[in-house]
Image (tube, rainbow, N blue to C red):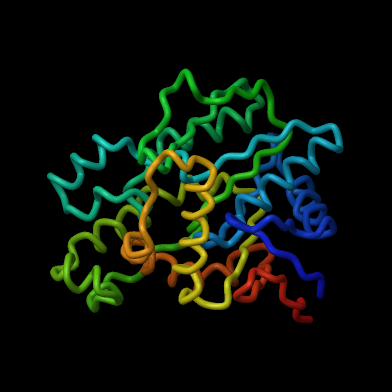
Amino acid sequence: MTTTTHAGAGFPGKFPEDLVNAALDDALAALTSTAPLLGISALQGTGKSTLAAQIAQCAEARGLHAAVVSIDDFYLRRHERETLARDVHPLLRTRGPAGTHDVALALRTLDALKRGEAVALPRFDKLADERLPEPEWPRIERADLIVFEGWFLATPAQRNEDLHDPLNALERDEDAQGHWRKFCNDALARDYPPLWQRIDALWFLQPPSFEIVPEWRWQQEQALSAKEPSRCGMSRGQVARFVMHYERISRQALRALPALADRTIPLDRNRNLMPRRN
């Protein structure tokens, strides 16, 4: 595939229609007695939300009811993360890494969608760093297809011996003993596999390396702020520090997911689709 496109927060372009149709076809081909669930796994700023929205639109054009759900919408509430920060480790105040999601809520939501039930879909306000009140959650009456997107979907935990050495300044200076990264890794091994098991087909949007992710996440932050200029987003320095919270599991995803995904879509540093390898 040589089509050039831009995708992801901060970019006006879209993924090509043949790719979107292929993703939808993969999901609908899944052998399941319930609504099929397509997982789109991709690092921050890669374009997973763009692709998920396009797949849902494509499904609607075929007369199907599609529900789009993000792992980001299941972040723990701020007071719950404050409790973890006090009782376990201060870095758990920051949303995102494994251990900072309400996995039970995610399982209940996905299972209800798979059964074809009416569901209120949780939503998280990133600029406010807080889950929206339940009365503000959008409601879907029935889903024929579920598109579940997230930055580390299906990523396996690391071995404990791989956690010893810090890999960035955040881990070196604020997690010198490794307690935070071990907590996150233990949560990834213990709590998330049941969530990954709900995925019937998995696509992975593969960036050229982790090094592009801070730039893409900054573009994403600028796009969020542009939508609501009266609200305060993160500075570029804050984004750089924020991304360090995600680096360890992101690098693990880059290592593991090409072998686990049903299809891997390589992207270059401008989010252009790379030619498929034979």
